[in-house]
Figure 1: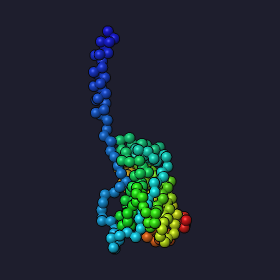
Figure 2: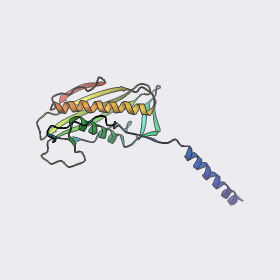
Figure 3: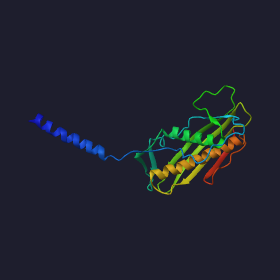
Length: 216
């Protein structure tokens, strides 16, 4: 009897499981890369004067999650399991920064290649201190970063940038859009330091607060 009952019940359980899977919401994937809006800068003679090396980015463990994380009005942080990054967050940030620096400066990024030992390189290192967003509030990108010349004239510069971008909504998509804008502003600020030969950095947006820049 028990075996017969189990055989009768099994199809019903399978059908229920399949119905549950069918009811699961689709997963949305997001990236920090922004759509291409303008042609990249290019050196006058078609050859860059230096190469760019953006090192792997460090991110706080609480922010380094595959899901989009958002702070709520009561202070709790919610994970949106149906809204995820296309790659690990450190890779997303590093890729977006490199993409925008290449476009701003018109140079080549060689992080995944072996540059010649005597190549002129600007090396970029970024340590993210805070990366979060508040529903209906602002996204915050707080990062300490360093640019350093290798085999070319210039000075190393160490800065901290705190960037706040309004969300304009409470959805995961609005949080991603705000962090995209923050990442673009951070890249443009870092680019200004490279253009100056490490002498100074200029905030690329009114949302950027530059703190404690020093030659290092």
